Length: 282
Ligand code: ZN
Image (cartoon, rainbow, N blue to C red; front, side, top):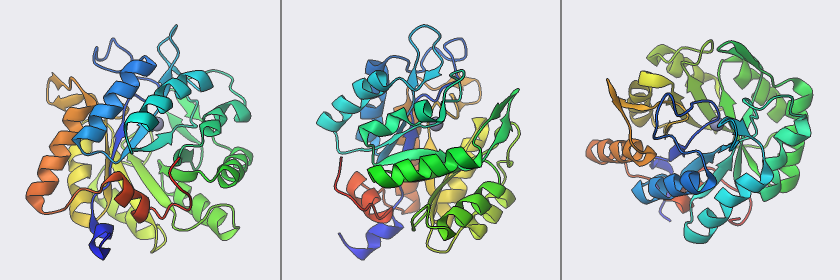
């Protein structure tokens, strides 16, 4: 791998999330087969990371059911070399214990989401208290799962850096800025510039914009040397008034723009190098 690979663009596809239902878009993947199939298409299109939630077959909402995660992860491990990022959010499932939220880690994904603080999210509260963060960090460290530190507001960077200083998180930190949520940091150029300036110098960052903010945020990241997340977890319209029919459409568009711009796309192994994974593929 040449040194230049560090400048390449990592595209993450966030396949389904936990909250957008079929009444919003009929194209959102629900079943493990649909989720794995969509992830496979995104990998084919150029995504090096897939961020995975699974859905309760009854309610359609997110669940942390280990068996459902397994049904997504196993075919992806067999058929692709994509980096698998499993959620620990448990946000749409009710009354989950901390341990239940971390169930997905038993599959030892290379990455898992680590939401570095609590925040209002729509009408609810996304609860990530310090004792949960300590348990999540400790479990990820033990299982050699790299945290994808999701940041909804600037204090979450302060939290992650503090935990790094205490030896709970390891360098280089990998941040995912999730901008434009109700009621987190706005998805504006100034907001992204600010957040990218307060992460540690050796940190790696990626950004996703909620709803129509995804394109301006992607373009900013392309130019600033950051990385990009797209997908139906965060936005369902391909353009104004037109629903995306697949996640791959979003990945394909970023690949086309990046090529035209002159920034190469990182392969999964190059993404592993950029993120400095400390373990063999799993
Ligand atoms: Zn997620």
